[in-house]
Image 1 (tube, rainbow, N blue to C red):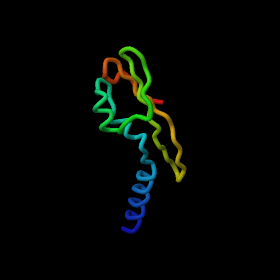
Image 2: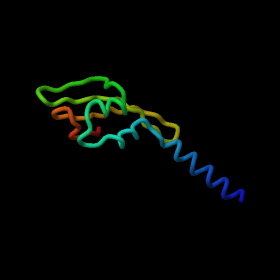
Image 3: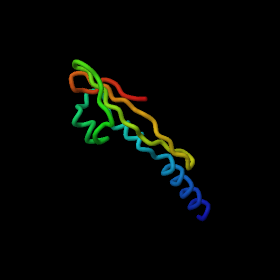
Image 4: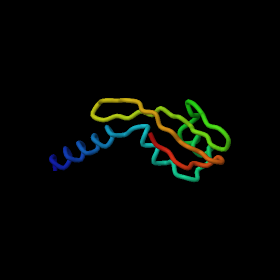
Length: 87
């Protein structure tokens, strides 16, 4: 019984320790609107583009094993809808 409790606690600690704001990227999918993306991430740090193309830039935190770092992520829109996203 104690071994199961220790194992469960260890697994939960590892899972929580791996959570990141970058994991929110899994909530983005092609076809989403700018309004939908902003509801997940908030306002972007910057918006660039021209014509019917826009790129939202976000800096998101990653963490692993008590280390935290920030990375830039980009969400690309054509005609107001997500077409691709990532680093």
